[in-house]
Image 1 (cartoon, one colour):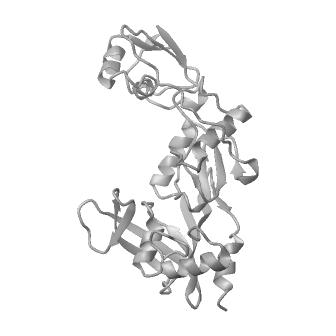
Image 2: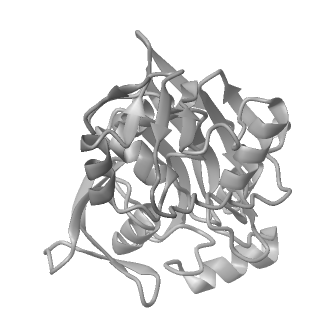
Image 3: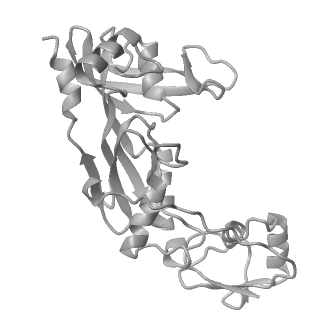
Amino acid sequence: MQKIVVHESECGQRVDRFISKYFKQLPFAKIQKMLREKDIRVNEQKVAGSYRLAAGDEIRIFLYERATQSDDHVHGDFMLSAKKIVYEDENILIYYKSVNQTAQGAQSQSENLTDGLVNYLKHKGEYDPRTQKIFSPSFINRLDTNTQGLMFGVKNYVSARKYAALLREGKIKKYYTALLCGVAPKKGTYQAFHLKDTRTKTAWIGQRAKPGAKPIATTIIDVASNRDFHLCRILLDTGKFHQIRAHMAYLHAPVVGDNKYGNATINEIVQRRHGVEHQLLIADELVFPMGEEIKRIKIDLPEKFTEVFMERQ
């Protein structure tokens, strides 16, 4: 018999889903059968699989066959820098991601922010993987490795559900600033179709749908032009792979410094003159509901953007 006490950060989940996450090798159909046969009880009572767990609930599981609990994930030594935390409360954390950091699934020579968040909260005593085995703190938005800007972290399960739902519903607004080159784009919302090519790790953009393509929308809110360069304020209406970079290139206004979709000649010039080695694209503002108010988190534009933009005046 195994006993699990539900942590505050894990409440609100269906008991069958909770058990499925806890014992990854236990078939879901088997869990349903165990609930029916009272081999899984909550607070000594029989419950249905749809029962929503509350903090402090005691789950007792009578296992008559070996079900291996998932191994603890190794989070390494990297920890978020307190100096780069833009906002934090008991539920969420907004972090400034630098270039060459990844949101999760760390690549070689990059820092994994999800692991960094876990280690930061462990260090603060706000997260203990030994007692919170089902939920792990994470970021709900994603940025390309070479795109800098604001990452939205959730500290507990309740907040993860709440803000992930708001993100899906489009109620968390993500604003970017990009330095573009080429044709000056006009203000407005641009719609197209998007398809990720997993082989080349690039995004296809077109006006006509093709199999597997999904509709996207990107809004250019403001444009300041200086000959070949255009400093643009962009609202990401949908959040597809490389959306801004690929969509702007499709509009003949690629992001400066983008080695995948950009203008190689311009990139070589700004690299030589200004040391720019990554795309000049930053997620610099998040706007989202918080209680009865609208929370707005905004950071300053790095000097490199205006330095390159102003050069040709």
